[in-house]
Length: 123
Image (cartoon, rainbow, N blue to C red; front, side, top):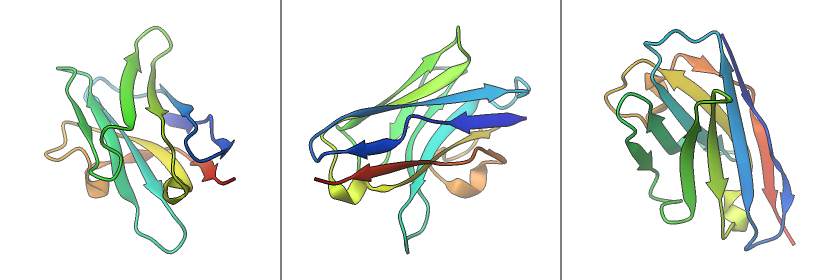
C-alpha cells in the first residue's frame, strides 16, 4: 500500500493550494481517504475526509468553508483544495486511508498513512 501526498509549497496569506493524494495497492474495503495536518508543537488534526462508497464529505471546524475535498477516479486520487489560506494553516499535510471509520476525522481510525507535504503560509 502506498499513499502519496504532494502539492505543498510556500503561499502568501489569502492564497490557494491544491494537494493531490494518490493511492496504490489499497483494497476496496479502504473506502475512506482523509487529509490531516500537523503544525509544529501541535497534535495532528483532521482537515477533511471523503467516503468513496457514498460520496459524503466532512470538514474540520478550523477549515470549514475554505477547503474542499474531491475524488478523481481516473487518477485514483483524492484532492484537497484550500483557499483563503492563513499563517495558522502552516503545517505538514498528510493523507491516509481507513476502512469504514466511525468518525472519519479521527486520526486513530486510519491504518495507512502517506508521507506529508509541507504547506507554509507566509508573506
